[in-house]
Image 1 (tube, rainbow, N blue to C red):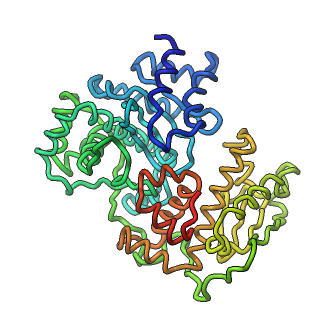
Image 2 (image 1 turned 120 degrees about the horizontal axis):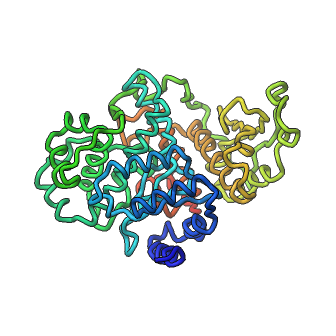
Image 3 (image 1 turned 30 degrees about the horizontal axis):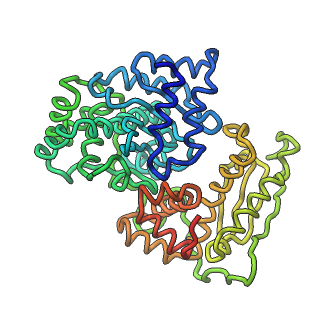
Amino acid sequence: MNRLALVLTILLALSAPAWSQSGSYLDAVYQVYDNASDTDPLETLKNSIRDQFEIEIADDPDVHRWSEDWLNATKTVLTALPASFRAATRMIYLEPSNLDFEVKYNGYNDQHGIVQMGHGSMYPSSVYVSKFKATYNRLPTSAEKIARFKYILARGMAYSFIQENPDIFKAYGQTITYGDYPTKVYGPGAEANMVVLPGKTPLMIDLAFAIGEYCAAPSSLQKKSKDRFDFVKAHVMGGTAISGWDYKPIDDSASNTTDPGNDDPGNNVEVPTASGAPEIPDGDYMPIVTEVDVGTAAANLPTEWKTAPDLLKSAIAELFEVLPKFFSTCTQAIAYMPTTDTETAFSAEGFVFITQNSWFMSSFVDLDDAARGKRFKEILMREMALRFLYFHPEVTQKWKDTFDKTQSSYDAYIDMQQAVVGYFAAPAWLKQVNQARYNFIKTEFMQGKEF
């Protein structure tokens, strides 16, 4: 089959779920072929993986490209896995979204075998990093983040294997006791609600996690559950033993917090105001938008970066035009800071500070105006969610009561921030993978406003 025919086959296969019907998604899958260059080392590496394993490696070159480290990690995973397991996967696609999910597998219609790696598979959330630190008393190294990526990839491929081998899955349910094995991820697309394949059950998630840990940290799985280890080895891997990829599982119950109901060790959780939310004005609402002179911190920046770009200001205006005032009035001022010394944005009380990194960060300066504006709005929505929670502490308590009563305020804040970004930037996706979180944001944050 030639490349054009393969492209058309893949595009036809990607026609089903509502969240993947956007032109940008289909275009991204096509662009990986259209923009391929024999002189591009990343394309050469992707092609070598395709030729060796008959699995396409795709991305959207205008948003997120595979890095050499991730591609080499992918090759390591595929080399270690037996062909009988790999055969159920036909594409590994790096999603262009910045949402913090790890991995998705869609088994609807003809989409079998397409594993979608999310932003969270390469860039662990702050909640994950906090849990890792609580478990190992240090931050994860770069090598350990790569090991985690390998584990997530194997887990994603497990779903395609499960769909293609229903008898093996049925036997798994007769062998192990469901519910005594941890299967937790962090973020709005909580794994218990992931869309993985038709007829999905929590037991499928259990098996996928077991397969991932068998590959990435086999001694850990054997210690937690010898029944799971033995089943995966015999029935999924055909007797193939995998030496492991140095993945370090975290303790889901670990916490750096002394008070599980409030702060975190980094002092990132403010004590909510006791003054109540700002008064909602009649008519339109716009916060104060200003600039901050940071002196020597901006000395080496290009001149055009020292003032807020017009397109950035336009993105703010566009965002506030569509947001409900119940949510937006909790952000009382937005200040642009021309400095690279901080993250993309941070906030306190009723103020959001956006930095040079929020618009000019080197990782996405080549985006077109529309894509850069979309990304900036996601960053701003993330911080605005915190401003809303500062003025509405009752919402945080309701979130905990609804989803996890043991959750610290810090973990709850991160969880809600991601859900708000998903609700605004990818509503169909969030509604599909986690209807409960979608409904919570719709009711408690947006008072019925949908995007």
